[in-house]
Length: 342
Image (cartoon, rainbow, N blue to C red):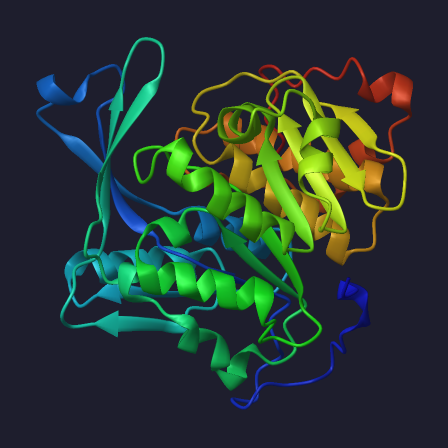
């Protein structure tokens, strides 16, 4: 597997800028959400925000001090300009985002309910669905240490699926670690159609993130060991089990489990992206597997306590204190009602 620490930090891209450490590729959309406490069919006003799995990961990484770029397409419309402005405001480079004059920016709408939040997509034929493998040939991606993808992208179109297959198979960014979040979206494709595709893409990646619930729904794997047996290819598979914790299963070492701290859940959307960003930040910083998982949990806790797809992150001193806590202090960690000063 490529080692992220091996890439030279002093190199520059053709534009004279330091190379990014992480490139994420995928669709980001405008999000409409009714006033808190209201369901969509009764709402008279909606709030406008921006959300997308891959740009969420890039945004959290940028907030954690890493150079990240988001690669995508948006429509030549106000929504597209809002998306690019929002992602850039998080400190993410957006010079690899293409504006498509012939296709719209995608849209999704949240419908909060008493037990969960439903999501309605309006993304068929979007600009991002016209992404193709050519985007990974851009010389500005030279020096990237991690390429992060998700299982959302191959569901968008044939060209998007070809892009992800190209990334995990042909490895167009030499030396880059390929990170893949399974991120199954049943509204885009049902499990019976998605399962073999996502398994194949995951197995050809270097690092895989998957929720235990989605792995069970897709492949009938009841525990992390079963997921690891199903995916022998990656160097590491990380299985997330919600409030229980997360397990990292390296190919050539013993599994590592770290329980999740208790938190107040305001909105679960985006927590998986935050976890992936935290884990990747730990990987880029050379942290050991336990601290990588802890950092994933701590960044996810910030997302769980926020109503948006992105949340501020605390200073590194706050993270460092908890990353270095002894096991007996971590295991009962309760962040309920605790918001780190940002």
